[in-house]
Length: 122
Image 1 (cartoon, rainbow, N blue to C red):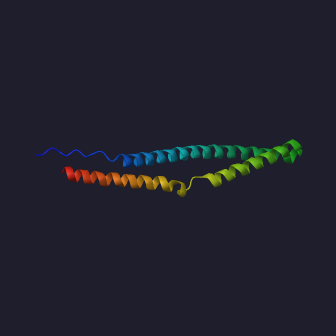
Image 2 (image 1 turned 135 degrees about the vertical axis):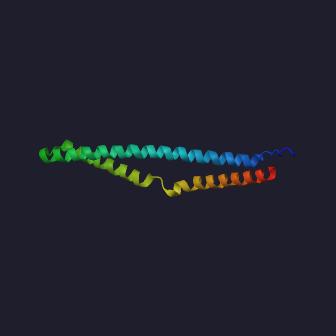
Image 3 (image 1 turned 180 degrees about the vertical axis):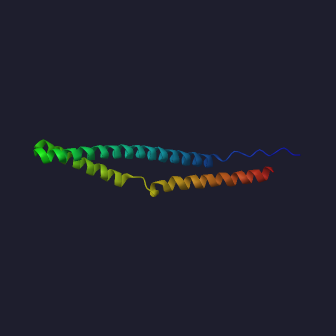
């Protein structure tokens, strides 16, 4: 029985490309996690503002206060900003395409290389 042949290490360029791809996927994941946390915070703030808006509208019917009108305007502007952020910055399939295909490409290459090494060794 002959001892198995040790595979040679991958060329440095392939290894560097692979490490670069992994770093890009990690950065995309970190950005996605940060965006998810921001969306959660915005949704919570939106809920709180809507509750406060309802309270102000009830109080405004009773008192007609200028201070309440100013706060109502400020809350409406903040709600518009939050809703715009939620609509425009939610992650989409487009933002996940590149990391997905990088993972598929390099994962597939790893499987193929593994099969080739196994067939050479076996």
